[in-house]
Image 1 (cartoon, helix red, strand yellow):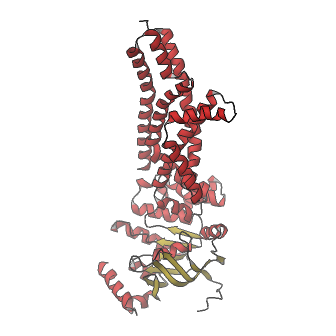
Image 2 (spheres, chains in turn blue, cyan; image 1 turned 135 degrees about the vertical axis):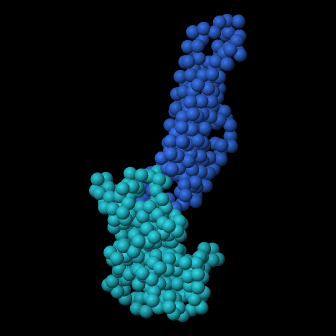
Image 3 (cartoon, chains in turn blue, brown; image 1 turned 30 degrees about the horizontal axis):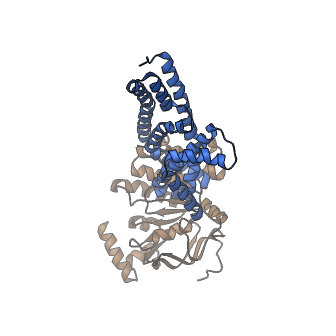
Length: 216
Length: 253
């Protein structure tokens, strides 16, 4: 058994850097496209609604691991050479956009109908109606689910190891194989995940409370 | 009726308006003409189509046949016509429908800024003017949920007034209020009426109807059954259904 010292810990932190970066990319990309999906999903165009529902069903109904494989190897198959980075970023964006799109669609529909009616009666157009009236309320409603999904996404980044990424979980596995101290190493890895995810959940709850107070 | 020749002073004109919800016939060949400055009270049992009727005027509901004209603008289904009409028509809802994430002032300033392109400073000035008008300026920085129902409804009236509409539609504005708050909202509406605002009010407040209305219209089963000046309407209703309805309403008030 080898020691788990500063070098090993630094290696884990290197992995953590990729974990964080992947989560941020997934969340930003997924946030932008997810908003688009949510808006299409709650639009009046029936064909667009059906298409976006199919998109959501596809990505919610298949494992993230498989989505990673398909994007990583699939894109290469059609002759486009993508870096592992780009492939993983695309896969996480697609995955997150489907989930966030569905969460936000539900939230948009949970805003009382009278809000859109009042906006309409005042003559507000779609953009203002959404941006000023519906979405601020919908995002507030979605906050617990959105943060919950972000926590899932952070943990889900461990799957990127499969296409060669040395992120936190993979880094832990490597150190564990070198030191033969799996319990200690994965214990540390677990604590690192917890240190990131728990404050996030906590922040989400706090945000929810603050916004509830403003609306009371 | 001289429906084809729209009088100079006619502001709203409905001709043979039809509305179904599936098999339910909500509005049956409604003809209605509202003159500038006229105050109309619409009453009738629930499900009689009175709310549907006023919601058709600002295109919150679409009609399936007939025509609606507001200030010479025919509601032809185009978004241009809808925009033009909504600029002239203000609406107050039973459940207030204030935007809960905005302060009272922001609620009032939003539409002038977004629809008319008014600057924030001017929109807020306008908002303060109308909040003063409904005597609630001191609450301008609060959120709707911090106000009583009566106060919220007065803010909703101010919000609609900020678009400086030519007509105000009231959809049971006092039905969701506790009894002690009904008066402050009715007083606001009465003062609005005194200033010459054209108003169509769906309400069961018969005291308000007596005091303010030029015409009381009774609807049942999607039809206009009877309409008359309040004096005549309450003293000598012609139709049996009107009598029954008035009997029930007045027994409760």
